[in-house]
Length: 419
Ligand code: AMP
Picture 1: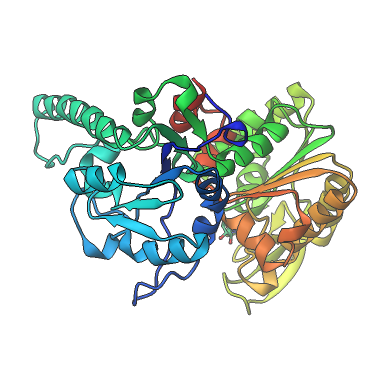
Picture 2: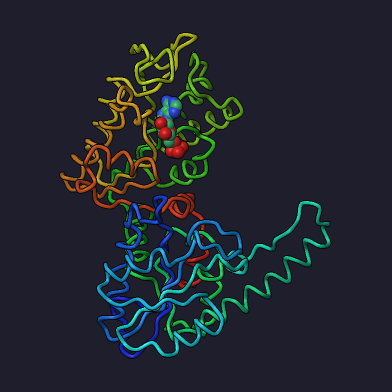
């Protein structure tokens, strides 16, 4: 693979996979252009070097059908405005129009292809009815695999170089995120700046963390975070667990969790995690006290109780003051901090104190020199809500891809380029 910062795009056509899956209002006006902004450094580098860019993305879930509601046309204008370059539009991502427009692209120009997911080949999943037999499924899948190869080859033929800058879809083995890389030699494929930065930040935390390394995991359920927790146990010094998953651990220890959210089928797993943490020398921190409420409502009655003595009819919805103090001390004395998931129902003001304290402590730790990475939709929402986005080292906006990377999985979009 090549490195984008060292690559000279002069006279080259680059096909760039971006993630322009942006939200719209009912008038198809973009309500948040963060994802377009995020791809600008890569696109600017290409055109400023004197190269041209063929931009491709998915938008929504059109399920293989042409649907004007999901047209990339809705994004064309904003990209042109932000790049300050005219953006030509191809009405399909493959076929004669795309071919012709890509062929006549001049240095400094940008071509935007229509939504990749107007073709089933992008995701590579055949359109099967529920009553299809095993035999039919097998042959449809094999046929689709061949079609996906041809589709990827057609996309690749539009350019000389392939750049992947869509970390958000790097966990998908789709035509434009992975298969296409097979049609470029090693020197002609690379990551864009966004993916490079994501990988650098993630690897700094997961592969060479300065110690002590503290991870704070929260959110609603332990079941959705279990693989990450297991993977992190091999890497962290301190693991703070909070939020809804607390109560599965506390119940497993024999505590009373009242009406708190609890996954009874994961009690054994919670005990296993505690045992593993001990064996691996990881300090495990759970809340010792919580804000219990008599309803899942902002204006519910609340009281501070010990985490293992929550009365019937009450549920733990935030970390209590003792817990907050211990979490803060651990976080502020860390050199590497990873945060995924709020430690309370931060969306309601009554139950936001714990998550706010975690965010404050991360900002304080960062100020003292720690490297802090915030990832996963809800902790990003938290950091933004508390106005601390500029006080942490790195915020990852990639949902599923980030979680899979934290789980220790090889992402197809990364592997396709790194090899
Ligand atoms: P996740 O998507 O798994 O990271 O979960 C995030 C959600 O967990 C947020 O919407 C929080 O409101 C919710 N959450 C955090 N703590 C609790 C709790 N104690 N009880 C119920 N939900 C919680």
